[in-house]
Image (cartoon, rainbow, N blue to C red; front, side, top):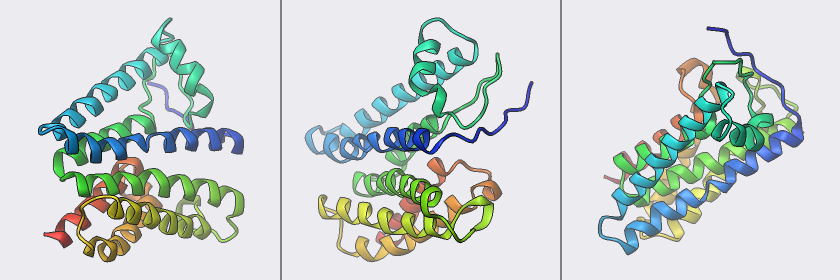
Length: 216
């Protein structure tokens, strides 16, 4: 199997990539609202995220194999935004698949008032870190990142968490627990290479665990 190579995408493509990331905020709304309106809503949410995860993986596999239908559509929509070069026959799992996997897992592990802010931190904080870091990053942080990006992650991620708490029946102590949750999630994002876990997956897990342990 050929080794995939990282591609330096343009800032414009990075913006498009993160807009796709932010469009996934519907998952936060679904995590909160579906269980509110349906008794078994939590499992409905898991079913939706699971089905979309399978569709994404199949599309990425078809794209790697130069498929005529799903593969072409996937390439048209997301091909220029991929950070890893895809060689013929090589199946590269994208960050989008990890986002859906994380949405599925946090909904399985945590109640909606924890799962929703956990996803919100990942979707907003990661986008802010990438865009601010690339545009304004002047002070290098580990693994090619910047401290400006880290600060953006913490500020935007906490704002998203606080908004979720305000719009849900979550306890007020989540505002306080949100501080270490977001900071530790930023650490997970910063040292993604060392922990060998995609940040789209690690961030909501860290946030959810802190809120779950502290809120018990």
